[in-house]
Amino acid sequence: MTQKTLLCVVAHPDDETFGAGGTLIHAAAQGVKVVTACATRGEAGEIMERSDATPETLAAVREGEYRKAGQIMGVSESLLLGYRDSGMAGTPDNDDPNAFIQQPEERVVQDIVDVMERHRPDVVLTMDEGGGYGHPDHIFASKCALAAFEKLQAGGGWAPKKFYYFAFPRSRMRDLWERLQAEDPDSEMAQIDVEAIGVPDEQITLSVEIPQHEEQLRKAFAAHVSQQSPLDRMPDDIAAVFLREEFYIRVHPQPAVLGDEASLFDGI
Ligand SMILES: [Zn+2]
Image (tube, rainbow, N blue to C red):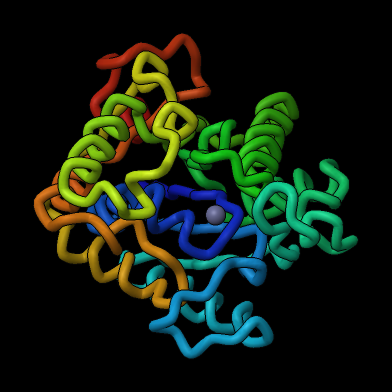
């Protein structure tokens, strides 16, 4: 039996950990070769006080955090595509000529096709089309990853077999938010617009339960020292629920309905 390969395409170093980390750990623990491809080094991100990174060193610091989290999760290769972080929507970083979102789509798609041809993943994951919370780099990475998958599918030669978005169901987001509101109504997380985050529940086609990997996943989250973690302000019992399960939308093959498969590798 040949080894299976999983590729996760993201925009910033930490998206793979915060979005699909439990799934990556689980796959690696089962002998799957796990590869991540990150479009940027996250140099436009904010810097948490606990980090000694500066705006000048942030790219290198985040690259180190990305590789460390990858090692903790059992990732075989933590690739960087070398684009520049475009920053949050509406910030001046958006207009930098090197910004990821300023690059021609064909070029980015070809980069991802090259990664796919080199590593031959059976299954590809990326962020949902809305980018989780609308970050322009997330949306662009998701779009280009899907276009790369579809280009290979249409090419008639080798192609990955399955393609998924990782996503957070809105009802789950609302539950967490209501509990955070009750515990600490003044916290930053309690101020977010929950209806603008995550995806409608009915879009989810697969949930991956990974309670056995909670400790390893917490360590991977903690590797991203310079960045705000979803766990930073979460009470422990809420965090335990958050870390226990990850959610997917199968984009290929279609049709996809909730419960029609038990894992990302069904049928492979
Ligand atoms: Zn991101």
